[in-house]
Image (cartoon, rainbow, N blue to C red; front, side, top):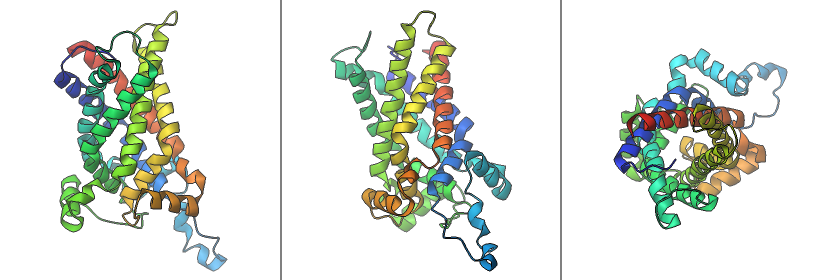
Length: 301
């Protein structure tokens, strides 16, 4: 991933690749958020009341069932809820975390990051750029999650008319500081996932290029992107669930309160709720983003 290009050029190419991946995969992200916000179903109802409680089953399926349910009950366009703040987020977050990665990595190794850089330096660089990027972009993440969560089956309905209305309403009703609701788990989640994505992609690509028959081509980028996505989901799912729940429901007092209540009410399995949807989302997102980024760099950088 090393490049001698200017920060501005890398920022805009990274932002473009991240935004393109966002457009392609946001239906999977919407399904993931809905799955993460689900609570345990209540105890079985008596036969007479069973019909009234049938709505619990509507969103109880997996990723595909959730996507189909959203499309059927709310329209196909609902799968792209949150796309505008999603693009805001990817432009800022994607551009910063990737654009800063090489110079920060060079800082940690004490010079230009060329040749074989240690995995620890890659992880430290990615953790650092993930923190910086998400502190800037966290308000866009909050609006995106709230728009995605605002569906027919969700108890908390805010009825924002769009991204700009959501920003304005949050500031007016909750104060400007509310735009950074869930910043703690968001920083933890994005720093961890960024480290898993960028460091593992960098490491996988470096490893593959040392193997016979591998060259710096689309196939190598695809394999490295899938590996990066898998590591990101395995490591980041628990904090991702806490982040989604805090941003989707403002009743939690803190990150620890959200973690404790989720563990108590829904069990440890809740922290990997929507895992398949999350892997499909992040795995495909990484493949699309890194493939796009590599091609854009070859063309313009």
